[in-house]
Image (cartoon, rainbow, N blue to C red):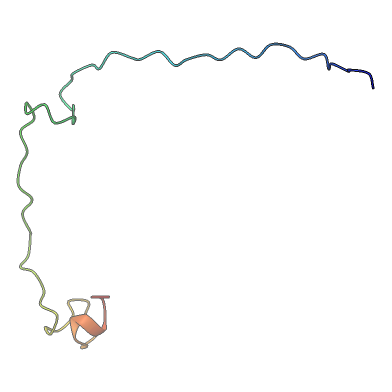
Length: 66
């Protein structure tokens, strides 16, 4: 039995270099320096049994409230 080696090139493994984190006005990594505004509704929340606001005369839960 003869030993047979294939001609293969050595594989280079490149490690990704860590990039330094840049703090900007839109930084969302929980540093506490971002001021968050509460989300407010333009109209009151539609109840499940209220008429659907799309005008179909169905209950919201049977129409658009999937």
